Length: 107
Image 1 (cartoon, rainbow, N blue to C red):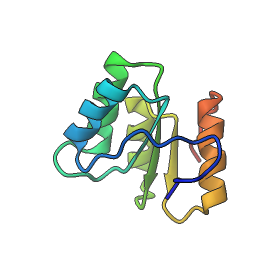
Image 2: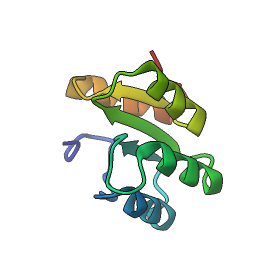
Image 3: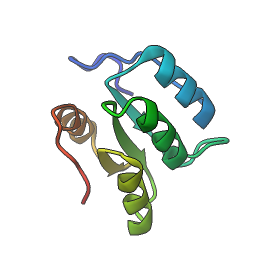
Image 4: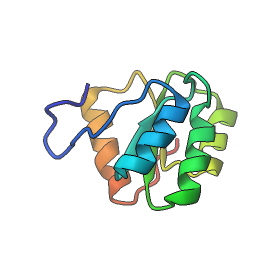
């Protein structure tokens, strides 16, 4: 989805929560784009684990769930932003750049 976007380098993709944690520790990305629902460990759990060992990494949720409680849980876990999957590609790219610059994106 983001392949070929200038200034964004995809360093890994994961199929499960635990794989995301493992890749994050090994690859040390600047930003992790997460869904809430993943096999095994969910996105909130992934965020908590990763932020414990790498507090500077930015986590941006891209999900279909618009529940305010879920947004709040993501923020409390240490995420920097929360977007719904119906955002346009340009909105997603803008959000990624903003989060990398330290902006927090929660509606």
